[in-house]
Image 1 (spheres, rainbow, N blue to C red):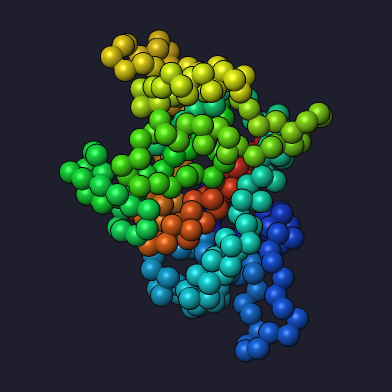
Image 2: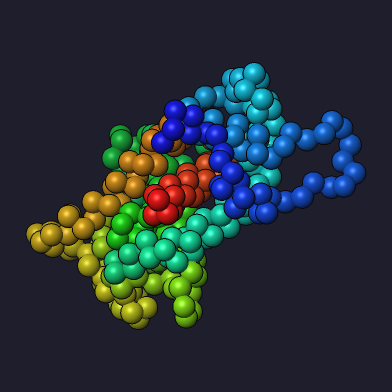
Length: 269
């Protein structure tokens, strides 16, 4: 990472710019702030966890309110989800995705209130939310993180995470969307889910409650915890401030894409 990770380089902007929704030809009011500058303002907030109204105008990214509205507009247009799919395809083409296994986990982010919140079972029933992630064997997010209330059990999200993996192109043949195995801790213990995973030709490797953990499972599952650590390096995600879930999810989806982008750049060097 550079000392100014919110600066968007030419290669990344070349991927993002075609995805942005066009402005109306005749739009009343002042000329809109260029999209690249707005994106850098959004990334500045994502990296530094400052309030939107404190975004320094001298940076030239526009006001915090402008960047906030652009984030909302782009999220509604599905920009960040499409960017994530493009980057997954590029990683797949470079043979940088490990489809031999996928890992799931659902830790609790710190919460400052908002929609999709509920009593946390691990924090004295304080109101909070929960993140659910599925990644490949190298820790690359295979879909954007899902946000639910804190009292949602991990086991209820297993199939949704698996089925939510988009078709990933980039290699000869049909796009791929199924790992060979799914690794999970005891929070994902469910015989019905095991049967459904096998129907999808996915081997469930999930520890059972009341029994010792599967030997060596932790050494394979550490990548999902590592990915959450990378996500929380974006300071805006360490504590959830957005009251609206869709805006919080926009930040999370953008962060997942940036993790993919860094891995793609590393693979190209």
